[in-house]
Amino acid sequence: MAERSYYIKALPTLPLAQLYDASYWEGRTSNYEGGVLEQWGMVDGQPFDRLSYYRDLARRIAWKSPSSLLEVGCGPGLLLRELGRVSKIRLEGIDCSPWAVEHRVFPAVRLGFASDLPYEDKEFDLVFSHDLLEHIPVSHLEAALTELARVGQRNYHIISCGSLVDDRDITHVTMKPIRWWRAFMPDLANFVFEAKG
Image (cartoon, rainbow, N blue to C red):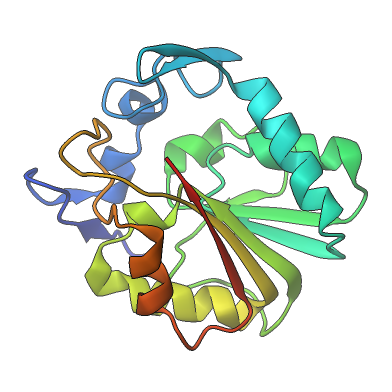
């Protein structure tokens, strides 16, 4: 697989493997204070129970009754693990971080990119992401969204919306209000977006 790199805020161009390495997932260059694999962390200076968050999110997704699900930008697969506990459907995940794939907590997590998904057309009933799209530069968004639409019959994406100025995650490059996202993708009828933050 070709090494990819993006321009991230004011940082020099770095390979994605370096952007999403241990320092990212352990919270030194991201909002994952306390480390993504720990149950408790801090978000905006407040205690945050990741396990409860992923369990609640898994229940919300299960309520949509998908027959199969692909999570794009799944990290080590924390949500997939929780979904596997409440649902017996086909679950798969893909992430661009070699560190996340190496430290996966769910077996069906593989290395890959949102703009080049190794799946058949409409292979999944539901394609899901949370906190993914704000990591993709605007110049790459159309390709990524086209791929998400191609492999999913339905799409459900939770997007962090806010200001780049106040965000300490160095990889959040497309922080836009939800109305911007809807205007950017008016032709994607099978997409459902939800704003966070």
